[in-house]
Each structure stands twice: as structure tokens, then as C-alpha cells.
Length: 97
Image 1 (cartoon, rainbow, N blue to C red):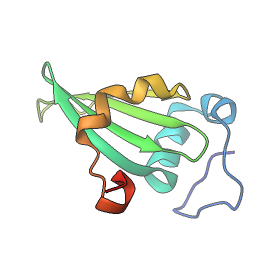
Image 2 (cartoon, helix red, strand yellow):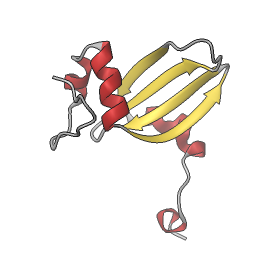
Image 3 (cartoon, rainbow, N blue to C red):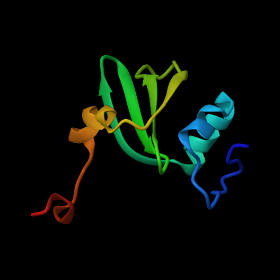
Image 4 (cartoon, one colour):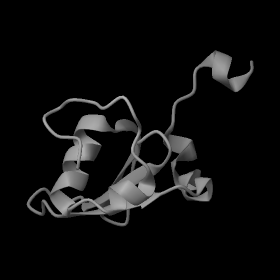
């Protein structure tokens, strides 16, 4: 059911379809189909933000290199994007200048 093998599907996956995937398929879908839009670090954790079209996925991992585990957090609420606003570069045209 997941998007495997590095091929993108024409149709975008919904957040409910994503949540229904196995952990492995969620990881593969983010790596192959997500667009990384921001990164931030705080309190010893690294947060990577991916756009999946109709929703976002946050990967949360330890900043310690020896710890390779991470949390996968899908969401649609744009309020959860607030911590990333200072980390997203906007070009002049986007800022309306």
C-alpha cells in the first residue's frame, strides 16, 4: 500500500492512509515522497519537517549521533508549524517586498 521503490504516485496520500501504513512504509513514504521544508533543534532533539501534500510529517530524533531511533508525527494543523517559521527561508517575492 505504501509508495515504495522511489516511485511517486500521481495521487497524493491522505493522512489517514499514511497513519494506516506500517512504520517501515511510513518511513519509506516520507523519504521517497516527502518534501523536506525545515529543520530545527532544541533541547537535544532534532526536528525535521516534511510536506506530504495534504499534510505534514515531523521526524523527531535525538541529536546524539549514536541514537538512530526517531518518532514519526503526521499532522494537518497549521498551528504546529509555528516552531518552524523562523527556520523557513522565504525569498523576496514571497515576503511581498
